Every structure is written in C-alpha cells, then in structure tokens.
Amino acid sequence: MSQVRIGVIGAGLIGRKHIEVLRSANADYTLAGVADPSPQAADEAKELGYDCFPTIEEMIEKAKPEGAIVAVPNQMHVEAGLKCVERGVPIIIEKPVADTVAEALKLIETAEAAGVATMTGHHRRHNPIMRRAAELIREGALGKVVAATSMWLAHKPVGYHDFAWRREPGGGPVLINAIHEIDCLRMLCGEIDSVQAADSNAVRGFEVEDTAAAILRFKSGALGTMLLSDTVSSPWSWETTSGENPLYPKSGVDSIMIGGTRGSLTVPSLDLRWHDAGQESWLTPLMQKREPIIPADPYYEQMRNFAGVIRGTEQPVLSGRDGMLTLAATLAITQSAQTGQAVRIDDMLANAANN
Image (cartoon, rainbow, N blue to C red; front, top):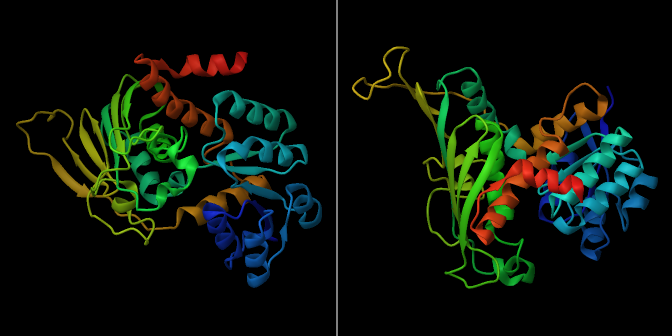
C-alpha cells in the first residue's frame, strides 16, 4: 500500500510539528508539500529538502496532496479549508475550527455537501491515556458519571504576550487552552447541554481574559467544573501532568477528575478507585489500581487516522462537525461571562444555522 501524500498549510509552530511527523519514516503517510508565503518557510523547506509553495492553490496543483492540514492562524481556517474542499482535498483543521460557530458550520456543511472528509486537530483524542480513560467510562467502571472537573493552571513565560493578538479577545486561555479541556470532558462525559461562566483580567489587565471558571451541565445530567488561568504557577495543566511533550517538566499530579456512582478516575495517571456493586458506601474502603497504557505520540496517531480516513478504511476520531461542538461549548464560556447568563449549546447551534 502506497503512502498517502499529505500537505501542510501554514509552517508556524503547529505546522512545523505536522511537517516533522509527515517527514518521519512511516508506511502510512508522507509529506507532499507545504503552503506558506513567508521567506522563513521557504528557507526552511530548502534546507530540509521539501517543496514549499507561496499559495494553497499552487501547492494543491503542483504537489497534488491527497489530504491537507490547515495550520494557519485561526481567522484564516475557514478560507483555507474552503479552498481545499473546493478542490476535493480532505482536511484536518487545527483547533479551533473557526472563530465563530456560524463560520465553522459554513465550512463543515460545504465539505459534507461535497463529500470531502474533515477532521479537527484535537490531538489529545489520539493519546492512549485519554483513549483508555474513555474506554473505562464506557465499560461502566465508574457506574453512572455524576461529576467531573478539569484544571488548566499555568504561567505563560515572559515574551508570550509580546504578540498583539495574544492580548486581544480570542487570544486568551479560553480559546487557546480551555478548548482542549472542553474537548477532553466531552470525550469522557458526553455532550454539554449548557455553560455558566465568569472570567477575569485582574492580573495582566489586557483586553482579553487571563482567568476563567465554568460550570458545565452535561446532557447526561452530570455536572462539571473547569478552572483555567495562564497566570498561575501550578502543577495542574495537561502539559505538565501528562508527559506528552518532553519540553514541559512533568509534575506527577492529575488535572482531570471524573466521579461516578461506583468509582472515580483521575487523569492522566489513570488511577481508578471503585466499590463493588452493593458496597457503594463511604464506610467501605475503595479498591484501587492504575491502568497500564503503552505511550504513543498523539500527533503520529492522529496522522495515521487521517491517512486511514483518506483511504476510506477508517472513520475520523474527531470529525470537523464534532470539533464544531467543542468550539461552541468553548465560545459559550466567553458569552456566559459577558452576559452573566447560562448559555445552551443547542441554542448557539440553532442561531448559527439561521445566520
């Protein structure tokens, strides 16, 4: 079976990660080419020995990719994605799918009408830790899920906010970081019905938030909380708890906790504690074990899934439409914080469909 040829649109930080994955020795996929107009991208391509084109159209015409990864800045996702869809090229759209639910819906519906597959780049969905956590919950190891909490508390380094867009609405931790936490909670607990939230910019005083808190009501009846800030020196963020990226020091603690009628699970440690049926009492000791997993780089797993989707042998782990639901729940945090009212996700989707 020949390698699937995949192009990358945008050679920024996340784009370079995808380029690295595609250039690795792998039987499933290979790098077709890169689309990026910057001289830096052209110089790096020449140095490393792959093709770089100034436009998406030229990359698709000359490199003939069978799929493409949209890794340009957020506000350009829809435009870039539509150019691929119009040419019949399946896509992974980096998170968030778009700036608004209405724009995301436009892209997804256009792709669906054209029969072009879409995926969303929430790479944690492909991490064996998250996969096993979701399996345990589906298997009933916790009983009925009742409550969940997720924390993303970190201190971004000096210089991070030197870029103006990171000091403006859309550049804060809600859309950049909370969107991953929301997607993880959706993966573990199911669809979110409504969000009630508050935010603050009290530390930095930028136009954008630096801290936010949300109460989530899931359609299953479970309740959840999420707390995030990019001004807190703490061990509680996925980057430092999971060991997924060796650039971050590993803290050895957990950042996600799921509670059910029979047991509880902490992530990423996969520490499972439970009662046997009929023994669900705080007077009864909990049994305990840690679930073993075989580590794997989720970006490589995501690319393998994408290659399978392009070949028609696999379904997307996270489709573009599914990623739109994560976007809606994330944007609901900001909307609720601004209005002081709970926001129902179905109402957001209906409003987007009517616009």
